Length: 123
Length: 338
Image (cartoon, rainbow over all chains, first blue to last red):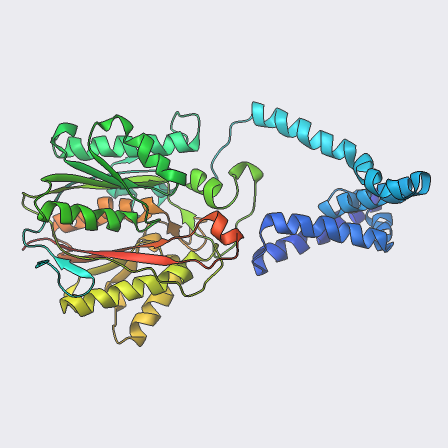
């Protein structure tokens, strides 16, 4: 029970820090949200390749894997895995294989929501 | 000989065109703002029964046009020209909004300066003897403008603090060669001014130098001073741009002080409404002019108004290619009685 609570707290803190970084970028820089998105994914890729992101995941769990940087982490892990089994070709196949579930889910649910929902204005 | 020219950028009308009717329809957010009592209609939903934001914007313009005519007891066949514009690609809000009107049509683009641009041209048509009745009308819509210039709302993107809020609404005026006023006595046409601002989220800063350029041209050409006006109002510089404009004017020796305001600042309540740096869009200056300013002139609370609508003449493509934001401002002098 104690462990479970700490899992949640750690995920909240790590995920919160990552999101706070995004908020600071939106407020304090002229970066568009699209650029911040790409920045987060590539940062995740680089940190994972250097082995740093795995340590963040070990602490934060879903708090580190759910944000966009976690997508970069999954990409990198997929590449490393496929390179081991397929050689250099794995650098081209591994990323998409590992993230296929996420990409497909995004397209599928995005489509369903776009059909089912009516856009509303911000007030 | 062009004998109506009054200096390098201003024309003075021999038979000053009258504004005999106005119309304004705004969205729910504007309908909660400080000027809500001045608008003809406040719609309770940005979609207004249509299937897209663009169609809704066209409908707002169509209905505003109908109101302008109704208030003046005129029919479309009385109107010689409609001069209209908006912010969407190929000005479709105006093209589709005016489609069924069966009136000769000029579509123009001056970004958010379109209202004053259309009145510049409309007043010239009337004083030139080419028309007796001209409708000048513009619109903007928060949701279609976000899609056009930033990101579609469905993406749920956060907005930056300096970003302005595009007004949902349409405003227009009916100009006539005859009537009791108010009168358009002078029109100052702006030049494109580009000070190298590249941030599309800070258009107030990009547009303020254009407003200053046109204001100075107006005072220089006509010999008027800021003190000759009860109200000098820029289109949609917002809080950021308004302060820049006031400071720049001061540096040039013109103290706008209390008589200066900005439609983008007037239309929302910054403390209560989350509108960031203030309102913007063609509909911002148009609805404030057609609603608040026109009514206050008719009540006798305002006698001389300098209406200076400001526009940022960029496109998403030019911003992506790293271009700076050119801006423009056009001015109209409105006088209650001659």
